Length: 140
Image (tube, rainbow, N blue to C red; front, side, top):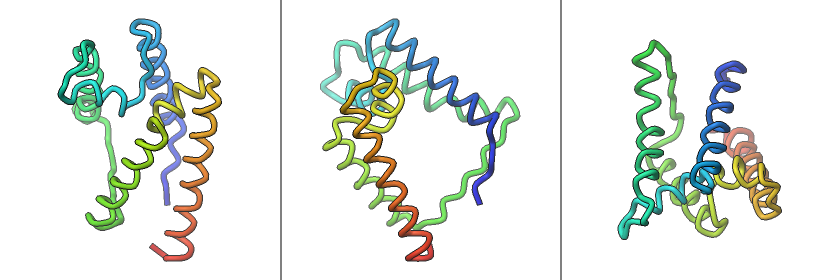
């Protein structure tokens, strides 16, 4: 069963939205994690400093939350092989979809980009189908 956490979810969504707005307002860039990450993989982009700062914040935020007394329950009910296969599938999707869920779903839809709206609809349909198959047909 998934925990119902409306206040934590709302707070997280607001923080993601603020970060996306600030990045667009201050740097004219979309807060898509794969696009940000691609600028810090050699050869480095000319704007690598803000990209490193953004990624460092994303990595540091959970430990800081824990240090401040927060609790993160994390349970992965699948094998390492399934995680690796899932990661590869997501990587292929990011490549062919020209971006990730954060770039399309958060930033692209906010800009009313038809490509991002279509991509997000595909993400969601694929998610529904995957969850249905794994939980109700395969019983995982």
